[in-house]
Image (tube, rainbow over all chains, first blue to last red; front, side, top):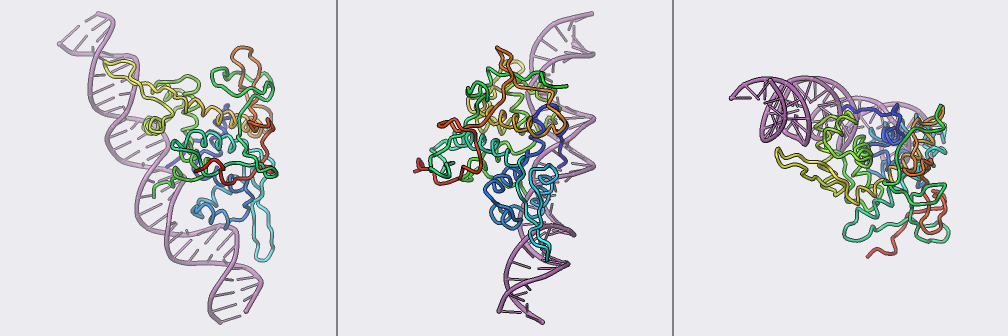
Length: 150
Length: 150
DNA sequence: GGCGCATGGTTCGTTTGTTGAACTGACTCC
DNA sequence: GGAGTCAGTTCAACAAACGAACCATGCGCC
């Protein structure tokens, strides 16, 4: 089942897809972002085959989304800690959360919601343009040469 | 050993991952959102194996992200048109675009940028809370029971 | 009326990733 | 010294991805 790579693509979507474009990596990141650090906890919470988890964690460490840190010397035991890069990835998962909530429960509403940790208010992620604050819309956007390139 | 499915998961991230968690579907959607409709154009632009494209398009049609529309009767020829659900998926790709731009060009900046179709201004997608307008941040968020459920 | 071209696929052999169960190795606690 | 903990590795079966070849229908051209 060999797999085509996009890690050298000129498009940020393609490179991101290369990194997280499988059915386990986003869930591993979801767990990591919920505070999971240990191999056994990932296995238990996701029911992911251990061999697959080993491979995914290795890639995420290699890509700098997680750090593999020894948390006890004897016997050596390692845990996986989020880096800034990994933490920033939350935005992508939040966008997936919103779209999934809006479109993948045809007969109602998902049982889970995102909430503010302090106030408990429901949070609804929305993708906007940082400058104008306007919601995204494909029709008003195009891809073009980056004026800051070179 | 079929791949593990998450389409009945209670978590929107998991269901979304089930749908787009592979290395072609996000790119097929990227092309669809750039206006590509025809089988041959997807093949040409992505260099995707035709059998794989056939499978991906079938899934996207089944899930209601694309419509398969006959655009000529003799010989019958079909094209793939975005639905509202598919168009809404742009937000997820925009979040991936932003994260990829920020983190996957360690030695510079990607050659491509998103621009406003009218003004040409560079657009930087950002994920915020719809109510407060504040940027997302994992640390201030938790997942919990949806108060609107049931 | 036969020939090549366009288009939207299907078929198929090979390669490679996924799965899940069994196993490992270093250490601790009793 | 036996059971338990934990972070993995190994292995065999299977399924999916790859890419090249092939197919089917109709069109315009000579």
